[in-house]
Length: 176
Image 1: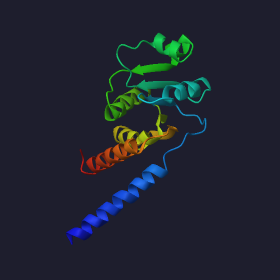
Image 2 (image 1 turned 90 degrees about the horizontal axis):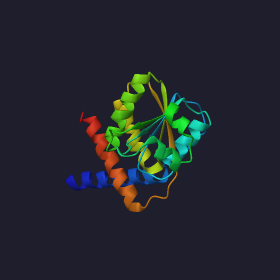
Image 3 (image 1 turned 60 degrees about the horizontal axis):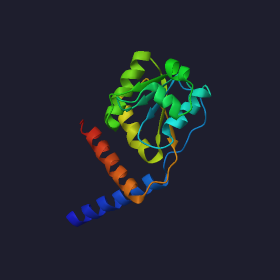
Image 4 (image 1 turned 120 degrees about the vertical axis):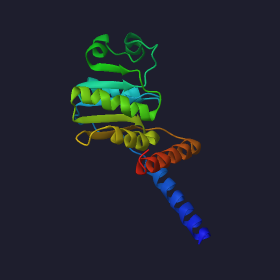
């Protein structure tokens, strides 16, 4: 009985991992949302958010997880973006240190502005766990649209992220 349970568990884990690795979330079209939230930590994320904001895909953008020493002018220069765009439309979130605190910071920012739709931008391999954390932190009335930045993750990155995702799913199920 224990051997069968272990075999079924292992097979479920393997099949889940295959699904996780093969069907990574994809970039989205330029559809309109109230806000864009970019989680720092991966190449192309901030670039994607700024491009969408400049194209009018949202009113405002939060960059969550920005180091306290970074100034808006530095980011504007680095991403070749007008200072006025940072002044009017981009908020630098400095409270988050991990994915879970990204979700909490984002939820607070969205609630203060009473936004109903948000585009979540993060790397493809990170999207499922980031979306899970954000769904848990947000009220049900907010719609999350997933916009993944494509990458070429290693097998190690995928394995680590899949296990983190499973642990957060289990933690959510038991109320942690």
